[in-house]
Image (cartoon, rainbow, N blue to C red; front, side, top):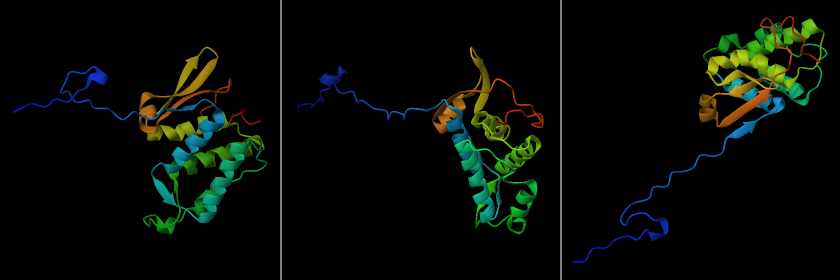
Length: 190
């Protein structure tokens, strides 16, 4: 009876050994610009829990606000006011999963952002400033983005948990003037 061996001479492995090739991970998406970070963070916050039922009009209003900030256009008046948010939540359908829903964190952030626009008398919200505002609600999702000092200023950077979970590496420079915690003394509108 003869024995049979598998030749692996091309790989310089001992005869009879098995080679297991691990699937390589896709490369990390690199985010280095405020506009890209704004779009990515908004969409992640939009998917976050808890979600509340809202009208189709509220979904449209949020998408219009997203497009306004993304395009770098000025807001003359508040695109969404707190009264709009409260009336556009379908309070009678909180446990009904049918119909449009929106993240509570996104609604709260938008309400505060629009209050800030009112206090400033209108203006353009820079992408990175909107990211700083979203970060206060983003942190509820987990320790994924942090502040880091660098040679040329302070940056928002991804943590290793963010890179593993979302497949994204973030390093975006913040504005030189920090965002005040209460946002009311906010001078970041242009």
